[in-house]
Every structure is written in structure tokens, then in C-alpha cells.
Length: 181
Image 1: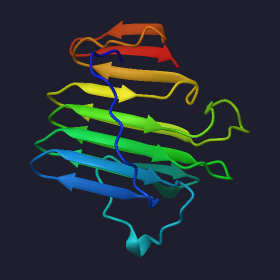
Image 2: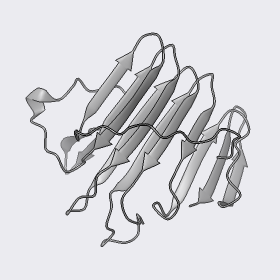
Image 3: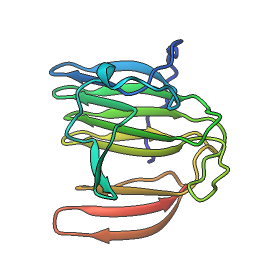
């Protein structure tokens, strides 16, 4: 998305983690995250599941798909750097970020990530970002993410001129856009 703001660089966390949840009732969240999607965390140490983590059924077995990172600011803005560590095995990276204010995300990904390439060197990135009354600024590094970027918004969406918008649809209360990264 295009904006007049410039991406900031913050000092990155030195210690990788996985399956983290940050919830703040009031005030901004300004934090850096270093995520290693390959880190296994025992279920007894996992934070409580948020309502935004998906539950699916495979062969009549309930499967909960945990997010690698949840950030929720109930009354405040979010400003974050998210760096994902390269893994030797194929992993997915799931993020859910929600706020009533502005959200700024600087995403740092290893390698080139294509959802259609089974030999991709980086994790498949799945992000849900929701702001009920603010703007969303998402900085994605060039040549680090390939594939569709689907956006649903109540108002206009602006993409960088480097992105190819392939589909736009308008509903009664929302506008959907899809572009290729």
C-alpha cells in the first residue's frame, strides 16, 4: 500500500520465539519480533488461543491452526518490525494483528517465497491485519514475497505502483482488491 510515511528501522530482537500473543487494553504497542516458525513449543507453554486462530477438521479430527504471532491493541496503535528466520524445513508463518488505531508493520522475510513452489526457501506467509478505525501500513521487502495479496476494506485501498492490481470488487459495505506481489 502506498503512503507518504517512511518505513522505520528498529533494533531487532536477538532471541527468536514462536506462538507469541501480545494483548494490550490501552496504549500503543511498539515492539520488534524475531520469529522462528520451526521452534516447537510444548502445548502447556502456549498462550491461550485467541478467537482469531482457525479450527479445521481433517479426517474428522479437530485441528487448531495456531498463529505464530498475535498482536492485539484494544485501544491504541501498533508499530512493529516482524522478522522471520529461514528454516531448513517447509513451514508456514501465520500472523494476526488487530487494533482500533493505525497499524504499521515492517515485514522482514528470508529468501523468495512463492506459494506454488514446493522447494521455496522461506515460509509461506499468511497474515490477517484488521483496524476498525485506523490506517494500515504494510511494508513488504522486494523479491521476498510472491503471490496474491488480498485486501478487504471499508474504504479505498492504495497499492504501491510496483504492484499489479488484478481484481477489484465492491460490496455494500466493503471493497475487495487483489494484487500480485
